Image 1 (cartoon, rainbow, N blue to C red):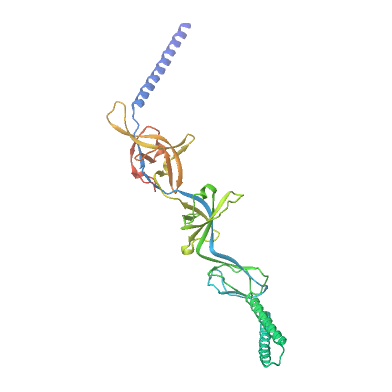
Image 2: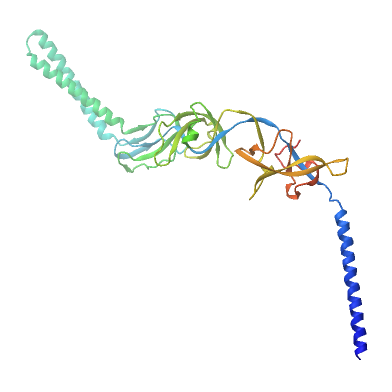
Length: 370
């Protein structure tokens, strides 16, 4: 019985050992095959590094306003008799917009004009009598004073009457009426907004150090939030003091508004163009990869394998230092030089040292390959 048990144990050990040995042999053979197997090259698109002109600038947020724009208000209280405009009408300078009830003022003016006519007639008669020597000097003085008072009364009533008819102070586009015919309005009631949208001013702020780089006359570009409207203008003013609360400097730019696409009160992105710099390396932002270790790019270079006379293209990860941004470009301050070929598509398939082939047909839209 014991003998049979020993034989069974020995047989089991032999079988198990054979299986283990076979698996080790197969694993070693497979590892050897893969160790000698060469990975196929990865197809990538590249951009050639070229030093070129760089247009630096300052970015800011601004608010648009019409060069001429105001909320129109009534000058005198009264009942609204006429509204002579509709929303979004094109208004000319001096055009009548609103008529306030002025019947009482007109009646007072007619009375004052009659009194003026009588005073001037009395003055003429007093002068004639004085010339004939049959009138005292005091009578002439009284007649002259009465005539002056009458003229002043007429002028005062004419000025009062003019406040009852509201006219446009300048040409522009008028807004929605804020009053109704027949309603009573107090002095100072806003009845509409009038905006001349042919030219716009854009107010924005910069830090003290940024404002020191700017001077009147510099070019600015303003863009709407969604980017569908863009216009160029000039800086016309810089506030001579710094806001003590925000520590920012306010600037103003004058911008033509062709087609009246910009609207007063609109939020705008502002870029102040600084003087052009020469020989700056700038690349599309899509070629730069960021990680905890820093910013890097993959550079394609020809390299010869050890013991081989044939050169192959390899991608090497190169750490760089980035600088300013403009549109879709980023300034490269260190790590690259003119002539380097930087991978702009296919980076996610690469590791440093990988063999590659260049295929610029897969370049991303808007990214050039050379």
